[in-house]
Amino acid sequence: MEQIILTDNGKKVLAYMQEHDQIFVGKDLIELTGIKGIYPVLNSLYKNGLVTKEEPTTRNFVNNKGETQVKEYKTYVLTDKGRNYEL
Figure 1 (cartoon, helix red, strand yellow):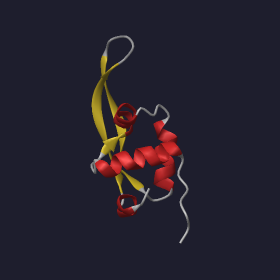
Figure 2 (spheres, helix red, strand yellow):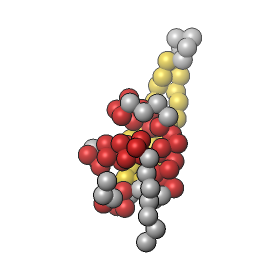
Figure 3 (spheres, one colour):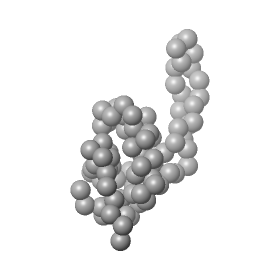
Figure 4 (tube, one colour):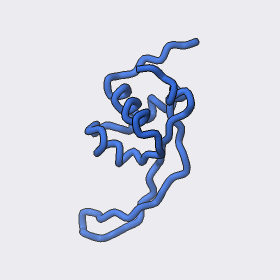
């Protein structure tokens, strides 16, 4: 079995997701974990089979002009491998 080597940020995100086993939007994980560069971390977890991408969700957001717009966000959830991965 191949060994998965995670960065400190990868361990932090995976630990958070294991504690709160639900579907997450990457943008929310930035706020929840304090990791600003969350997408490379999520991509690494995805490539290692620890998380999977779910159907995108749409949300309203206010742009820098103060206008409300709809934006599509990627969602992520743990796989069984991610749930059982020991940190």
